[in-house]
Length: 81
Image (cartoon, rainbow, N blue to C red; front, side, top):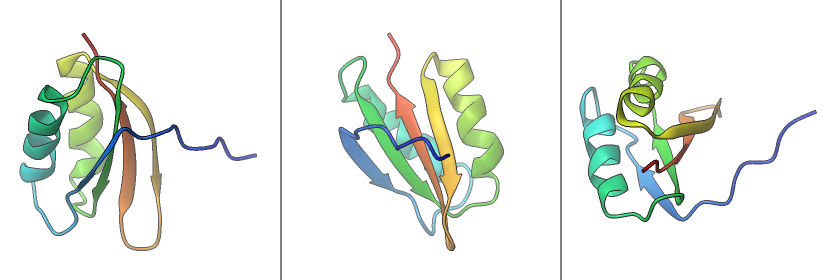
């Protein structure tokens, strides 16, 4: 059974960007969001699989889930306080 994706408050399209740009752009976007809002990040950089979860842990944000479709990965990040 698949868990439905959380409701997104914003989407960041980082497809085509290489490390460290997906994380840097996610950090910038999250700064402008309210605590508890959810950012969906789309990325196709293979390093994002490691970098985005690490960024969330180090920055106090919650990685609600990650999944993959044919051409990219999808991450859902809840902004922490």
